[in-house]
Amino acid sequence: MSREIKILEESELIDEAGVVVGTRPGIIMFAPIIKELSRRGVPHFVIHTGQHYSPNMDARLFSDLELEDADYRIDGVAECKTHGGQTARMLEGVERILLDRRPKILLVGGDANTNLAGALAARKLRIQVGHVEAGERSYDWRMPEEHNRVVIDHISDHLFATGSIAIDNLQREGIRGRIHRTGNPIVDASLQHAEIARRKSDALGRLGVRAGGYSVVTMHREENVDDKSALRSALQGISEAAVQTALKAVFLAHPRTLKRLDEFELRQWADGLTGLELHEAVGYLDFLNLLAHARLVYTDSGGVQQEACIHNVPCVTLRDNTEWTETLDIGANRLAGCDPAKILETTHLALRSSRQWQSPFGDGTAAQNIIDVVARELGSSTLSGSGLMAAR
Image 1 (cartoon, rainbow, N blue to C red):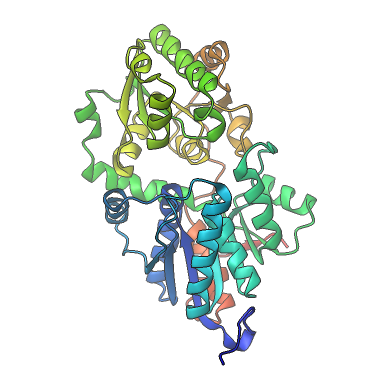
Image 2: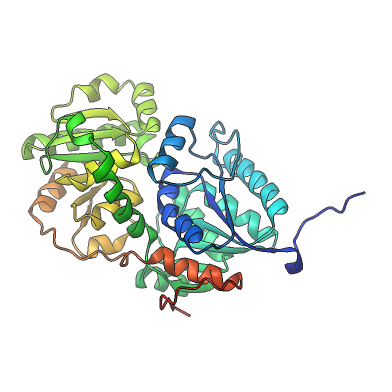
């Protein structure tokens, strides 16, 4: 009769790292980390949980980012309709892979259910957990992502923080793990991928826009797109701002958002809004090209807030709070919620503001800094001597 395995002993662990991805923002953020693992010969494998998965879009994203396919993919997750069902399926799938591979450390990044499932699976098996983008807080307990961030941070062994605000948050909460100030790999990713986008994307021509002559719109958060009133109000405000500023608003609608527009019988209404042009979401390289050349961005996405800041594009955030408060402090970002009057006001403020801020998210060496820590934990000789600074 085989032994029932509930935990792994340290002697059973292998000197390799696991990486968990499952959402498109997560794949983008982890691309430079995966490339750095490969460049330095650090043994590793990649799990795709399937939280965001479609064969065409995922295959295209991995190809666009010049990444090898994931080593594992968990099936059936995208069909789960509840947070509990989705997280449970990913938790079971990740655990099964970890029991087979037995890595010494597992890296998760951000705040999606994918990362909670990965972190829980590793923690229960006594595999070290490394959390990329640790310590970010919106302090909005309505958001499932906020629950995930807090839980992951409190069960992680290594907390890879983007800067001083995140470190302060972690220390204030009495985090047990070791905090490392690494910068944010989204900077590495955005800069590296912008070069690829310049070579490969013709999105401006296809959509008939010129650099600096339009705004980009994205919305996908539950509290916005699952609320008919909030969704309608936000689009009404963006339309009014587009008319007043003579900047066409290119709305790159997430599949979830398109589904809600249809369910709420708002698709025809949205199509008829003056100044707003509705499109299905585009591939990442096309999106990055459109973002980098936009005059303004409207979004409820944390990742888009960061990338707009990195590329010196003013951002109006369609939320009442943000975990990326650094962007507010330097004038790169403004909070508007979904109120039309507030959207109009913040649009005019953003367009009048200077675009010469310095990105607060690091200098593009975050992946190198993170892998320095991973390599040390694995006893690897592939350290680069980057001068990584640990917070404690």
